[in-house]
Image (cartoon, rainbow, N blue to C red; front, side, top):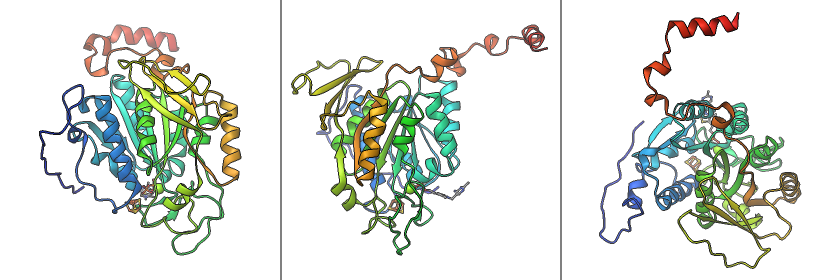
Length: 351
Ligand SMILES: Cc1ncc(C[n+]2csc(CCOP(=O)(O)OP(=O)(O)O)c2C)c(N)n1
Ligand code: SF4
Ligand SMILES: [Mg+2]
């Protein structure tokens, strides 16, 4: 793949984070996506979130499948490990990488085509395994890279650029992840960075599979009248269920909201999520209510955003399988290859 390096100019006024890095240290190569593509705004939010969290890029693994969305890991954290995998197969690669080294911080970027069409089975199983990763779906309702065919997230009745009407029902990745028993499900909009950055930070810090569906308009193939994934439609039908604030462990917890207005979730590393109910009847820890709420608003054509469901109690893949604490690359050879006698013993048990 060809790419263009960004010229590096450090200004003395650039702020550094807790580990002495500038925001530029979290950027990647120049984007080759269409000007105005929602995916580029999500990239900017990812850069900001990781810089604010002060995570060293070399501790991160960034993964993707195939699509315009799946190209985006090239545009952030050049210093991270990365693998641009096969269409719809990113979750398998993520499972392998995280099984081999649980200390990595995993961020995966996929598309609605990549995750809800060809990769639907893989998406379901990685949620079910509760693999420790942030799984972002950059959702534009079309296959952008292959020139604008309807994807599985296109709403029935929505129009393609050339006028065709979609007759199929849509798959909602957030509702699907909640139905599958996912431990963290949120939705954002590429045009709302203020909401998106705390959702990304919380997803990174969540121990388990954090699914973040982000409505991300495709300006070239799906930003016209009749599309329900356009900037205009999303802005008009936007409905925040909760307002999300991420508070890192070292910071004193202060909240501007009166008791009863904010729900507080303490995450495994001690950081906290302050969830202010924008809708007084919404509780993001109540799974069946979250499902009903999404369905009610979907039937009214509204796009519900924010932290939709969270459960900090669900065990992550390594807890379920009681795997070794040490990364595979650091395991002593004697443990990895225990020898012929141990193999014989194992075989005896299988007879
Ligand atoms: C196995 C396989 N099948 C089909 C394709 C063709 N293909 C490439 S990208 C894509 C869809 C991408 O859509 P999405 O994941 O929504 O990403 P977007 O481009 O919209 O960001 C398809 C069908 C492929 N590359 N590989
Ligand atoms: S075709 Fe659509 S999704 Fe792809 S880069 Fe252009 S605007 Fe973005
Ligand atoms: Mg798409």
